[in-house]
Image (cartoon, rainbow, N blue to C red; front, top):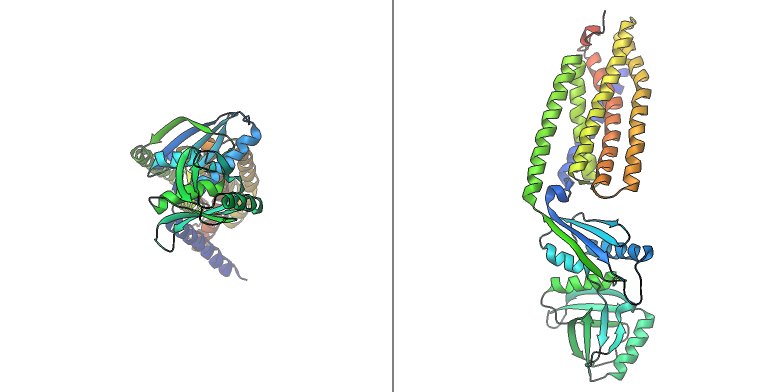
Length: 403
């Protein structure tokens, strides 16, 4: 394959990367965190009971169940994290009805079947599935539930003994439905009495994802308005645009045509990062924006190292082509080492921290990989193009390259 064919393939690679990034962003968009999109921040604390003390195993179970509940409710990009020995922090961006969501998420959700005197006949510990739907006869919202083999055998015994008698169904201490036992029921049953399918689905989620091992109390609940988030976005965009403009002016002033190439590379870097954030469904927060801005500085720094190495080679009397080759080769080690040390720190933060600090670390990691790719690959491709088009003719394109 000739030199020109290779350059064409490299150009197509750049176009492909830009296209993929734009399509990814257009298709998925970027998920905004609580501080940008608004939403609800809730602190839940686990409570000891007479039969169970809160420990690490209990907290892990609480975390898993609440996470499943939140996901089943279809809430947008929630974040759930441990805080201390017995607290969970739940953040729900852009929630339409935060009070209702909190009620569903933090409810103990212990299903019980009782007689008319309130005696507990059976709990929902043997429940394996619960789905909301409309019944076929009257089109009323119902929950169809299913029991495991042990629960089915026990429920059959209970309903056989209660034929013709009323049975009450409770969720925690809230009455759900009372119906007369008309036949023996084993593994499958139905709960009626819901005002809407949404109400039935919320209860079905609680039953399907399991009861909490211990009750939770709401220690803190606050709402971040979308207006505040919008102001933060606008301020961040203005700061980012101004920063990019100043960086572009500085690079062009220092390196002339290569500075223009570096500025173009920076634009491609921005598209690549946006595409990665959208494709990975990452949540962007204010600390995350700080991480991206930091990685922009690193991307510019990589270009400066490359250009300075090229200038040094030109001072040694090498041709421009040879200077570009050896300049990139000499700069690569320094760029990789500098980014690797930052990457290790970001990985440690991402693994051992939670919340906004972890968001900062993840966006920084994405920015590091994107900046290295753009500096070592995209900048090289654009410099080669400029050289082949005879736009980049000699050392006079690099300020200070000739003595």
